[in-house]
Image (cartoon, rainbow, N blue to C red; front, side, top):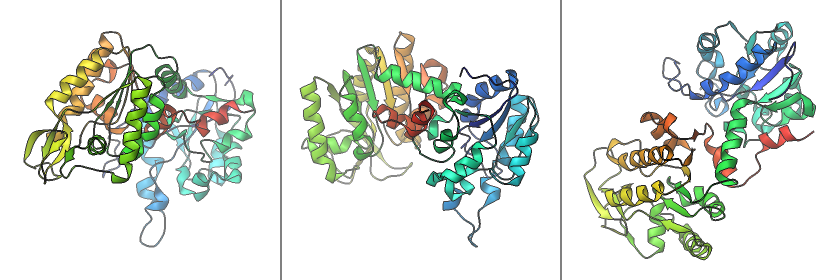
Length: 401
């Protein structure tokens, strides 16, 4: 971020899509905390900051009369937190492109911060509307994209707005730079052996990632509900476990490709099984390919934990995307926790570890291991698409003149 900010207004796209409780208090401030260094740098350099973000999907959750539920989705809930974190007053515009936003932006002085209202109050945001993007761009002199979590969306505030700034008047923020640097290190500049850990419910959600991993991984660990489609494809009995029957041929094809590429694929030898999908279900440990009728695999078992840990501890580069089981239920969280601890241990031994994606990030955070892995991504879908080798619109827009 080598732009000059002295005397300039910087329009900064942040990802403040943070979870709020019923009293509209922030329950996880990670995304805001990660954006603070960029904001402080601009202020310290003599600039002013205009922050824009989305919060939730307000146009999908309208009031009964069809109006926007502004109380639930307003970014005004974040003003108090920002003022405390930045140690300064934060102006708030009750719109992002209207008269109030333009007046507050025009009056903004060096060292001051303005937070715009939720960009998704406008349908033009997600449509990538050029006129809407141009109105946003007119508020400032330079544009900074520090919202990696939305970099895979060609929305007005994340991608289209960049077209209205010259190449020397737009840049990535510090968070975006770190996300790109660390993802590139894991995928393009990795020190072997590379171990990729994938989990989650569906093969269909992760197949592009699995395919891309064949190019540089030495071993791929597959856990979570997606593993049972692979066991079924290999002729196993999976009881009532999650199955994507239409993906059986896809799973077999992937296993053949992995063998041809010399990439080891590790499936969980055993599973913690339940007689129903519930936190209070009866449980037992079963071989993953021999699950009785009426039972379903909801977590990896103790043998799988040991096998996966051994592989992880031999790695020099680790990529982890997705949980090993139904992590939100304590009875089926042990596998994900054990993998998190193994990744932290491998990192301590010198491996580079990248953690990205919902529950794998949650596991690292809940166990207090965030500082014990190399990098925790703030972008679930964006990181997944980056690892799949896709060009993200929000990144491409900054590189273009």
